[in-house]
Image (cartoon, rainbow, N blue to C red; front, top):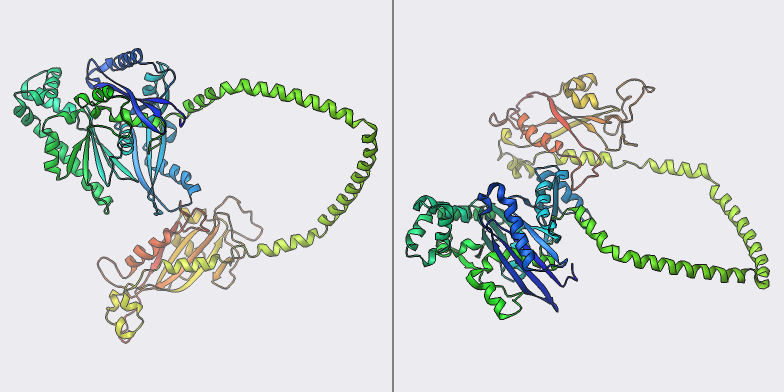
Length: 631
């Protein structure tokens, strides 16, 4: 699309079809044509006639304008689509697509096979933070919408959400300076886009121009069409004051929803402050709306009155483009055309992959004939070259060289055989070296286990950490958030399945672990995602070899797919004894030590963790004694 000379952006709204054509003028763009075709009836109130109204508008558009295969970008409603913005964990760029797909599965409320989805990355210069926007739409809704255009042989190359098209339009026109809110009031809903130079956030609220019209229907006992005409001509009506008063409740609802959105955005982006609002959409022609928003939101509110980055091709076109504030309704189509010309800031597209592939092959078809001609010419040249080389090969001088070639080949064969013998020598010795090197596998695992165990302990108060008796006494013994590991016992099991599905306490007794101590914690789980850990102690105290693995004698059959690992029994002490919210220290151990242990394992940011702890519990807790002579 970078080489496109012109393109159309088409937005089928609830009241009208809006289209803008851009042409390339050197390194810049210009508005070359536009169109606004109103429907005979509002689409939301047309029932079964909705499809025929859209087809009629597109037929009129095709009659008035010649597209001739021009790239076309179309919009889909923000209410019919899904958008979510997420901050990614710090990962390498090559892993971002994998992480984004993982987030898409979590965030999109439908199976990925049922939707078309895309994403856009937002980065801030000199910052490692990466935010991603994930956009999706159900396949059947998207296919039905695209069919309106393909039925008229339009070359649809971009499908974009309406709010993102508005952002592309105002960003390209240099209107987004600082944190800016774009308020696009449509017929059925209002799109709120809060944007700065490097990120966006958006929300769609169910208040639009039809809500104002419905209010006038009830207030003045009119039908919908007459109420719509009254709303459109309110500025010149002698009843302008009464019309404004009737619509005031809708104004108040709109302000309340905008304030809610601003409040939520500010709570998430604490360092960002909205500086102004830009109004878009035909509803902004209503008298008093701009002033009402400015007074109640305490923010500068401007209406989009013109475009500057892609001016009209001539003064007459510029006058009609801005006449009757048409530019308010054309912002979405303008942003779509910018993306079709490959000049947009947000480049994501919901165009189905099937259509993209078909277009790619269609564009390459014209090159197939040229490739076939090149193949024929190349084959002929190769055949001629072979014939000439054959004559040279059978010449007397070439025959003399054949003897030299044969001698060189024999010598090369002899050397190759000698080299093979050298390579095959010392096979058993090399295997022995490999076996010795394999002993180093998992040599650091138990050190990591010990580090994780001690890292999972709760952090005592600063006075307790000071280790000075006078400082420690400042914290009453029963209030000291301190847990001490007194001993650790491990037992290896070649099948942890029964342990993970049963009660750890019963297995602790079965294994003969000493749980008669004041407190004991047991953990069970696969020690490694790759099976057993060579070089690790299979049981007993750390540093001491253990007995035979559970499950039978050494000749017992082992299921290679069974989860393998260790039961780890930790004996801990704690002086903490506060009745509420904890009971004799067990609550402290559960809420800190056990909770931290269960968090150990593979994560999206660290998928290759050596082990995990899927199960942990207290198997016994006993109260020892209170010695007043101790610190």
